[in-house]
Image 1 (tube, each protein chain N blue to C red):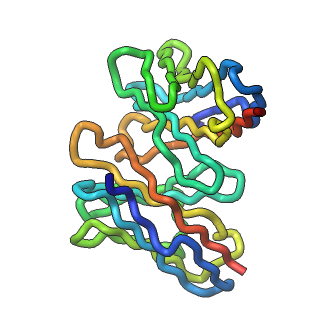
Image 2: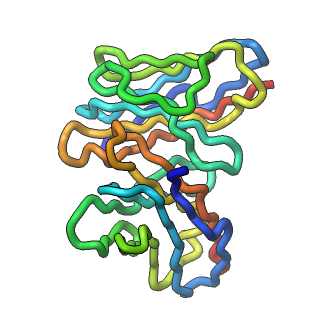
Length: 114
Length: 114
């Protein structure tokens, strides 16, 4: 079965640079969520999109922005990167039906900021 | 503050031992409850979920969980663990009224000794 695809899997950037993470949800999933998992920490919700509109916002810094495109893929744009942004960034998607609360996670993008 | 609590940060068991991982939440109202597993270096995988109905839910890999509303708990159990169950286990809650994002507990690292 198709899963959530994230690219790139690994990314190394320097402070103050920008980064763009991509997420391709499972086909027919209309909702995308972004989570940040720091080393040894639990995933923290950043932002979500439903039908290409932002649906909820969590602890996403102002330096970050995201959007969902017409094909339902989503991009997380991160600017003025800081050392503390080093983390695993997960994307999850959920389907249109009753099981909307079941989120399926991608493999994550490991961002390292030097 | 409303939260999800996993009281055991690290659990070490021998193979064939029984497992119970605690999860408590502090949200009122109707919540959806989940357990995810994260194997080393991998993404979050859904073990099981509770939306409504029978409070005893069975998941994959022989795991089950019991929702006890009066105790605000959703403990994960497995009668006999295997070495391959070594992973981090996250309890997650979709609080009432939220768009659909999950709030995760801090995780429990399970180490099963062969």
